[in-house]
Amino acid sequence: MLIILHIIGSVNIMAICISVFVFKDIFVYFCMLIISGTVTGNHCPQAKPVVNHCYRATQETGMAAHLKDKMGGAVSAGEDNDELIDNLKEAQYIRSDLVEHAFRAIDRADYYLEEFRDSAYKDLAWRHGNIHLSAPCIYSEVMEALDLQPGLSFLNLGSGTGYLSTMVGLILGPFGVNHGVELHEDVIEYAYQKLDFFIKMNDSFDRFEFCEPSFVVGNCLEIAPESKQYDRVYCGAGVQREHEDYMKKLLKVGGILVLPLEEKLTKITRTGYNTWETRKIIAVSFAPLVLPKHRENGKPRAVSLPAMFEVRSLQDLARITIRHILKKSGFGSLPLSRRTGLKRRNHLKQKREHRDTPLLTNSYLFMSRLIPGPMDNSNNQSSTDNEDEDEDCRRVCEQLEEKEENGRRKEGSVLVIETPINLLRERILCLPLPEPLKMYLLYYREK
Image (cartoon, rainbow, N blue to C red; front, side, top):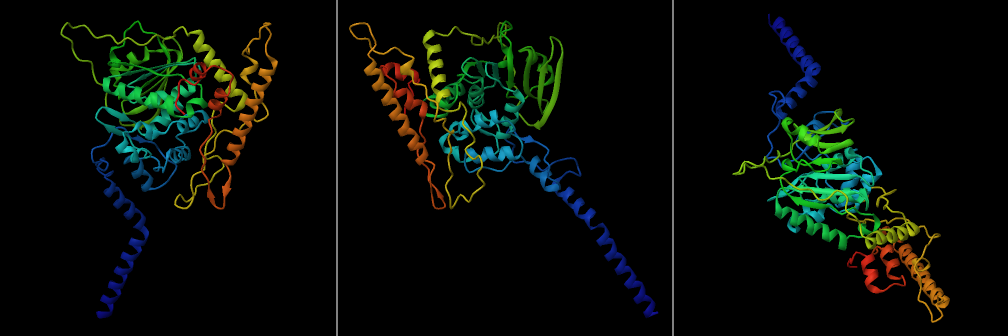
């Protein structure tokens, strides 16, 4: 009898061991589902989500990737703006060179309040009072979906800090249209402060041909019906189905509308007068649009947008043309990636190398040959003065090239960071022009 019981006990133990071995993967997966909350259909509660998150499907496998996307923060935090852009590129949120250049040209931290700058390079949305910035992955998808080109008209509904509008302006160029509507007046003041800082202090302003944004205060659901239509429209707040047609009316035929429509970032292309093509991009979480307040007289307050195309002054057109010629003659209009060809490095041991656009050193065009020089008493140009001015310009540009080359040298394993040279500024300053005209060409920017 004891032998029989012993045999039965051994069989049971073996059966249990075999069962655990065979079904262990199912058991582990089931436990992970319970932990993540997906068995009951509810995801892990977040400690009050900051709108907005993007929930993009990744190529990773397993539960870890699933949990990461649902909890927000689609890409790793960067140590600086360049590293954040590297991470967005690696995760395929930034896919085109044009969008990459715009993102690298403007430091996201510049649009944060000083005490919150440490959080600027995380892939998270940020809000302080009425000031709000979407997550970098959101802006990346929006910029890619808009398919921006020079000369287009753009309307930003809920323009906020102006961060997105400024990046868009770098692509639209000087003959585009760049308008924004913002509900809060204090946010518009903040946006203009940041825009002024970018124009006066950021060297990227001289590397691009910029379409300066204009902002108006108002509710984007109260835009005057007689307003012109735009080539590109973006709405930065959650839109419900009842407002979809209203948004579509703001768009020209052939135009693109990008908006968060019922928790999905959606791209709508107007293919004809009454035909549309719709594509869902990613799942997102946005704060909803603020509905207009009822007025006592029952009439809606119409928001008047800036004029679509203003007549440019001859002075302004001349400034744009001169700057364009100087930039094209000396270096490319867009900066290359600062990390092109560079591998990830240990930031505790090495400093980041900042690369500017390579110079086309064999093609210079000096404005002294385009602008008449001083006239002598015989109404003839003073050739000696012109030759001296050309020689001075050549000497200055040669010195700039030498400084630029020295700024890229390496000492041992440590990369030496030199102050970058703004070649467009230096070339304007060495032109044989009166100082007020030079400052006008520089947009009165500080050094």
